[in-house]
Image 1: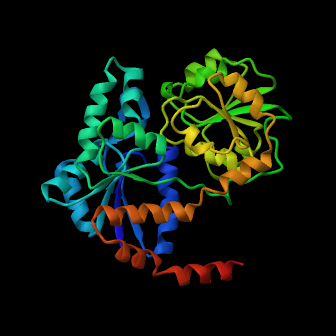
Image 2: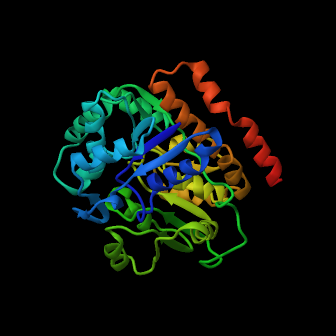
Length: 357
């Protein structure tokens, strides 16, 4: 079972979309599947207007057609609505080939935050893009309900998982004894970071990440520590050094960073909106409040063990199996066929676990 994932978001970008597919690629071999990727770095690129850190592929329809035909995959999954995603969609439609998509980002809100473009135009484009596929994967029930009300069809749930071996509690305090209130993620206008930076909170504020707003915010908030982007062990240590993870975004569809913070034993403070309210289903793991300062101060009182315990419910293996099951279901394979295919390597998985132990 070989799946091509077409994504305009890829390394060296550091964000939840990239990390989700990196983690998925690590997990699917356990179920007898393989992922290949079509990404911008395979072509010449140019910087995205208003967000130069994102590189857009300068590919032609012929280039994408030839690549998809050459890799000989069983299924095509389109992760983003960018240039590569649109070309892959066109390739599949011209050949009457079913494909699946994922809804990761509320681009209508992102675009309208930067340009005078009505959100309704963006949703019209996204609805047209995704409804032509055999299934659209979304991460959270509240997002599913919202998109269904907007006319999106064939919605399928793909819950995210977190690497709880990498993201774990650690005896480290990189930023002092605290309290340390932190944010990890893109430093961009759609993330609403200033709502966090303007809060009157004790201790220290730390921002981990890069993006188009970084220079502006560093000048405007000289007392805040901006570390720049981090990855791997460095990122995990940064999370573990915080006391509260503050998530000011109003537009995220899930927020993988929430799971990563919780896995490190860091309670979360957020607004009660799509994404956070789907992740923070256990009140012991975080606080949702329209007043972000109130949420942050209350989260400071929560148990780090409870935060970690909640994150353990988000299994990487379950997320991978759900993704594969959705792909097969969208292509009209019956349930018995799907179950047989996804379970055929279960003995090998158990053998690996015994060997590791």
